[in-house]
Length: 277
Image 1 (cartoon, rainbow, N blue to C red):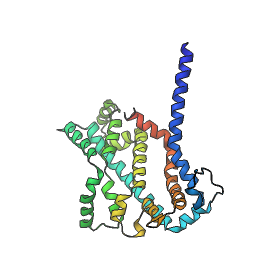
Image 2 (cartoon, rainbow, N blue to C red):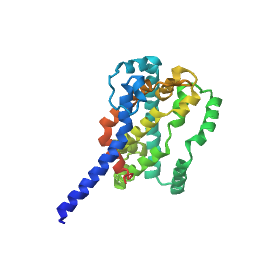
Image 3 (tube, rainbow, N blue to C red):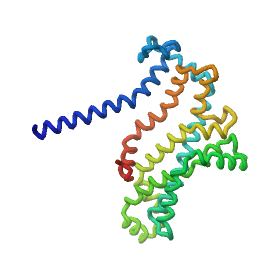
Image 4 (cartoon, rainbow, N blue to C red):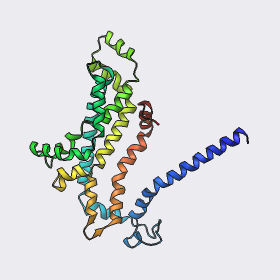
């Protein structure tokens, strides 16, 4: 068997595996879209109907008006954007310290810092909630934003990228009288757009999808976000799956649009920060 034939077989096998994997990944998304356009009697029909007999576009209108989703979307955007912006600032500062500054115990401190990533988030819920109560922040934007503006993963991601920036660049800037703070914001940050976008995407998606913390620290519909609002369609008597899927599709759109426009920078940020493979 010739080399070219072997190469074609390997390439065909790889494409086949990737295609099967893509089908399995996209299947739940297709089911969500299909269910959002069905009438209730078709949702649990056997055998399953993947294509609705009649496309019920009004499901989206009914779902939107069933709860104050305009307010939920505003809260989700506000909280996600604020958390993302503030985390980029704190992560850039922390990453610069670990990547470009020399101080006693830096490596040990960084290892301990990374070790905190192994603590399950659920363990921190009660201490954080008690702190929020003592500060009087329950049912406020501060409770939704402040506890999440520092991310160990964000600092780690940026540090890996900052390490790829030559030390000579810093030395040259220092000779020209550039301070550390100015070097960070005027030289490193402009060079770090891919990793900044990657970190921003991770944070935005995480904040957008946050459910448990929002449910705990908010009491009124005016402070709830989209994921909590989706629970409106489930009750003790059952779930309106067609409306729930319609609202879930609307909730997914901002994430898809963001990834569609920023996927190139996102992939660059992953590969250049050393997180690939």
